[in-house]
Structure formats: structure tokens, C-alpha cells
Image (cartoon, rainbow, N blue to C red; front, side, top):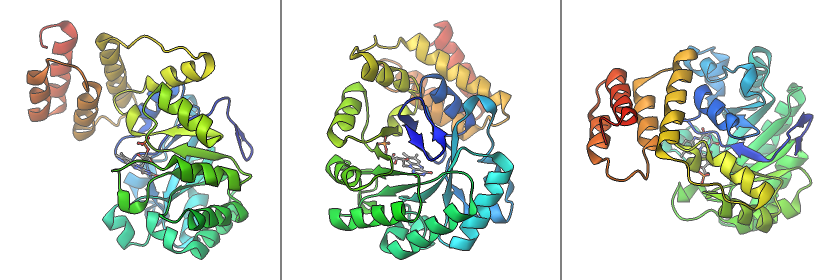
Length: 319
Ligand SMILES: Cc1cc2nc3c(=O)[nH]c(=O)nc-3n(C[C@H](O)[C@H](O)[C@H](O)COP(=O)(O)O)c2cc1C
């Protein structure tokens, strides 16, 4: 799949997820076959102010490329200025505009999915950014209840110069409940010439194949199913290439992934208590008969106790 001047040798993408897709996690997904990974969303206003925490979200390394950095905002000038800063500082392979976040504090600031109510402003933002950047620009949107209106917005995004569009088939009102409408995604794919990437409810090999065949989209973006399970990219790409389902990953292999994640966090100096706790819990997902271990992780007060509990599991002393 090509996104503007960016050439990808596959079509599986890791979704941007705030609080989840830090550099170590992206590297693991990349290792298992994600062909394009995205940073967590970054506020344009914070980038313009050179806020340290927000700037850190753009941090990358050669092994993870290509990288997309996602921008959140609503003022076309500020967004363009921040995009140029990110382009110069991190040289991302693409910059993406968030048109989907349904969180209350984001909507209050008229960003994310609130922009879907202002198609003209979306057009202005996309046009301003494409004119200001050498980097390809993409957008990631949610759908509206009305498929025609959704397609209208998608067409505005294409006409204003975006190189690709990611569509999450849920409305802002749905949040993360209900199902993603692959039918609306299909109608958008039919109505545009730029690559369209389907997102929402791709959980495994079968759903991936179904969404790809049904929508005829150019690529698939995977979010929640990769949390605690970056190996999903290997499973899905193997299935799409061969039609074969790989054997279940052993629990030991899943733990190896967790320890690799923790080592990468140390390497890139982003090891953090709350993140490690969340990731440990997700890597233990679906494992039976380890309730005491889960409780230990829940009550762990620091990084050492989380690591100690996970070491105990690995060595067979726990669980
Ligand atoms: C914890 C979490 C954080 C998210 N953060 C972002 C974000 O920063 N930017 C964005 O465009 N979408 C964000 N999303 C939405 C996902 O990118 C994706 O569109 C959504 O989860 C649907 O895909 P899935 O069914 O594969 O998870 C987030 C989702 C989750 C669960």
C-alpha cells in the first residue's frame, strides 16, 4: 500500500492509542508485522508551546520506522505550526489528524470527533496542513449515524489533499461499545480514490480476512486486540498470506513478550509504574488459574513488585 510518497510492504497498521502505544509497544508490534505504527495523539497547542511531555510522544528510533504521528487540535494555524515543528524535529513518515476521539474533555475543546460537526473546518485544517508539510498527511475519523454525511466528510478530506483515510466504524456517541459498522467503511472505500484503512473490531485472523474482503479496503488498523498481544500482527499476516492459522502462543512466549517490553521501556527510559501495571495485566489476559497473581499485580505498589510477580510466574514459583 502507498500513502502519498510512503511505500509500505504490507497493509496491517497499529492504531494510535493514548496511554498504550509508546515506543516500546510500537517496536514489539513492528517486530511481529505491523507495517505502520502511530504515536499516541499529541495536542497541537502543547507542541507549539514545546511542552516536554507532549514532545516526548514524537520520540522514535530508526528500527520502528515508518512512524505516523497523530495530531489533535482544531485551529488550522496552530495545527499547521505544530505539524511543521514535529516534521522538523522527528521527521515522521506521516502526520495524522485525529477526527475521532470521543472523550468529553476533548469534545469540550472542539477537537477530535467534535470536528465531524464542522466539515468545512476539517477541509480547512487538511488543506492548511497538506500545504505546509512535505510529509504525507492522513486523517482518522469516526462515522456518523448518517452514511451519506459521513461520505461527504470523507470526500472533503480527500479533496483537501489527504493521502489516506482511516475509518473507525463507530459513531462518537457509541464510544467503544456496540459494533463498528463495516458497511459504512465499505461505502467510504467505494466513494474515494485515496487508500482507505478499515478500523474497529478486528480481533483475530477471521475478522481481519472478513473486513478486508467485505470492505475491499486497502489496509487494516488494529487497536485493542494488540494490547497484551502484539503477536496478533504475525498471526493475522500469516493467515492473510497463507490461509493457515498459527498455533496458539504458549504462556511462556507471552511472558517473553512482556519481559521484552519491559526491557525496551528501560532502554528508552520510559519505564513507568502505571503503564507497566496495565501492560502486565493485559499480557496475562485469558490465562486461567492465576487469580492470586492478578491480585498481586493489582495491589503492587511499585515497578519492582510488578516485575517480581512476573518473574515469579516465569520461574514457576507463582501461578
Ligand atoms: C486506550 C485507547 C486509547 C486510544 N487513543 C486513541 C488516540 O490517541 N487516537 C486515536 O485516533 N484513537 C485512539 N483510540 C481509538 C483506536 O485507535 C481505535 O480507533 C479503536 O480502539 C477501534 O479499534 P479496535 O476495535 O481495533 O480497538 C484509542 C483507543 C483505546 C482503547
